[in-house]
Length: 501
Ligand SMILES: Nc1ncnc2c1ncn2[C@@H]1O[C@H](COP(=O)(O)OP(=O)(O)OP(=O)(O)O)[C@@H](O)[C@H]1O
Ligand SMILES: [Mg+2]
Image 1 (cartoon, rainbow, N blue to C red):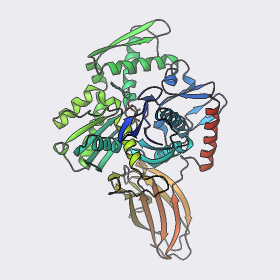
Image 2: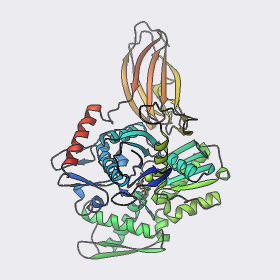
Image 3: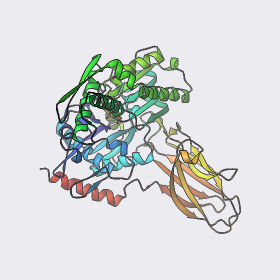
Image 4: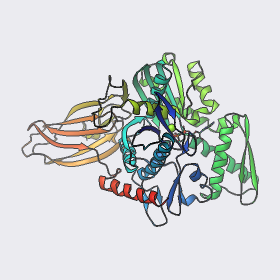
């Protein structure tokens, strides 16, 4: 069986196509499952029962893992000293969601389309794919969240036109402009911020409440432990109430007594105005990259739980002159779109044809990809080979030249980012590549670079003089796990699960 999974920073949702329509699948916690893990005596539990333990035992509690995807470091070290990488923690969440969905749907879930923010780079996409494999799921496709939302609107509501998807979730923000027409969807431009979401709005409210409590002679609750976890939960609750009410009371138990901090919606909007303005800047920038103006946008789709804050719709109305759309539940559109795509992908063993015409969904690259090389002035700089917002799948060739005769080797460095300034982009050293002897100065070395439909990249280096491949790379970065490590991790996960019976 197949499902679509919106693996969120704070909440996850699962959907499946049943009887021809996509529906959210009920899990133990209902339609949304907190992306939270709690280690109860070393064994992981996922969801609300984990989230409830955040304030009781913060050292055994892990959340916001998605923000660390594609980074190497452990996100948790358990009592026995076992380290968990971000993809292993995500695997625990994915395995829980798949097993819950299996119970709900009556069968075993083996395959899934999993969504990621459009702005995820290559390492984070690979980590997501790895997480699925560790969880025992075949990742049918790693799909961009805004594209998934567009698919949901296009297919479920048969809508067409130029859409902007404004997705403000728990941990990330994405804006995407796309053309949707029935079964066809073409992404024009996308941009976002990996560290901008409801969590950051919570943080500002936490600071506000903590200072108010201090000002009235109360204790410092931001202790990095139980007090802070309780304060965080109280502030998130109050923030949600402020989406309906014009004032709310933040209620949090201190070590001494119950503290109550009143906050109005207007005050909350004032202290978080800077965050909202950042989403406005990014929206404007994506519009400019699409060569469109606000009047060209037929509809703004609100996606992500934080888009329920009234200030979001107000801002977008100011920009577009119209109320944005919430016809599909903003927490659910992404999972529904993922399920619809999962349903369309060819059955296993048949090669999946991608690109325009197959499913009709065309996405774009979210980062420039290039090579670090010396420029005309001999300064090491970034040469973008595939610019951002290039439709995928895609392939580009570009020649670079040796700097001197008989050059022995080149350092093959891949960049991710759009700036020419090497300090502003991410650099991954792929290899030191030995060159054949006797190459003249300015001998061309051809770089071939491409993205498949998952936006996973591949890269090759070709010696034009001798017509010979010097190296081909499926990126394996230090940030990502090796196959052996993944297999070991899968075994550990199975053991942990067996121990839970
Ligand atoms: N009614 C509401 N008003 C304000 N914020 C809300 C409301 N409902 C949910 N949120 C916030 O939305 C966020 C969760 O949204 P969502 O589930 O879309 O995010 P996510 O998928 O976990 O994150 P991401 O998409 O960034 O990975 C949380 O920060 C939550 O506090
Ligand atoms: Mg989300």
